[in-house]
Image 1 (spheres, rainbow, N blue to C red):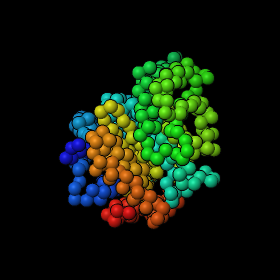
Image 2: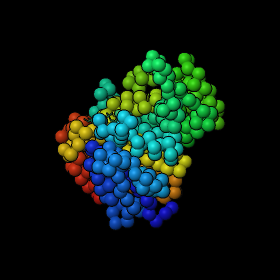
Image 3: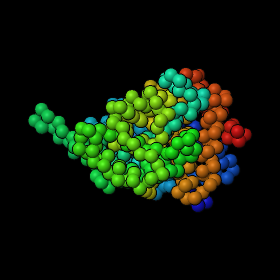
Image 4: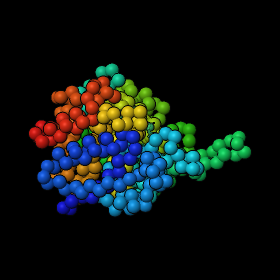
Length: 366
Ligand code: ATP
Ligand code: MG
């Protein structure tokens, strides 16, 4: 437990600054006078690249590295690229992931009361699972290692190491153990999502999953092929608890899952390593709506609640765990009791109004 935790805040591009500002206000309201967080703001992203020629300054990296947690808005603007053609905004997230070894990308997919799902019959509580995406290897780790032969054939390797699979699968089982409120009448469950019937790398992922699963007899383990998974997440999402999967598959089903709970604006994301935690919403910078005051801040606010829970568990600090829970409760209050919905989820509320209602909920300790 510390007196105060250092939070490095990187607002980034597009709607990033709007959703970050909203989230900082909510964090302040959650603690009142006794704020145990110290925010320091650092630049990165496409806009900063336009201004300075540098999309991820060294000081920003150092601040991220030494902070207790990193809170991010969103990075990148389509068309703003480095001279080599790579997206200027991508640098920040990709470099953090690899240099800080943020190997677990955790995406809770939860339908909040008050939000309509495009799925028929999706009652609140029916969708409440977590996708644990392996974030350090798999197909995306091939970035830069792929090759194009004589402009005729392109090849990208899919790499899965025993160490990489073991740590992500352990992470998923530990998460299943620690999740609040086991679904009624059944054990916790971890689902391995792969394509073991076709590719060796996925068969290896599955066999290491089975070895690790044997160490958690209290938790049910099962396998589902990725193609079947896309169907199940539409037809029977309530079956799932924790899903662990390879990098690219995790990327794809995270967006699919987000669509079932109101879209990217409702979907928080945490990228965790053994030392650092990086928290943001799952959406991008949405430049089409930037500066209009209509961005949905719920995803970033929920990411901040995850941040408090993660920090609280790490440092055995009940103040943070409690504040994280109160933020979740106030989000439910705003969505369900007050019906304060942004446009992307079918309402008319702006970012400010949403923020104010959540802060009021926190002050009134709803
Ligand atoms: P990235 O490549 O960074 O993932 P993307 O191309 O997937 O970005 P986003 O920026 O996530 O795209 O957003 C796609 C569209 O969804 C936006 O143009 C915007 O209209 C809408 N959108 C995304 N996030 C939000 C939000 N928080 N509030 C309201 N609308 C949003
Ligand atoms: Mg996207």
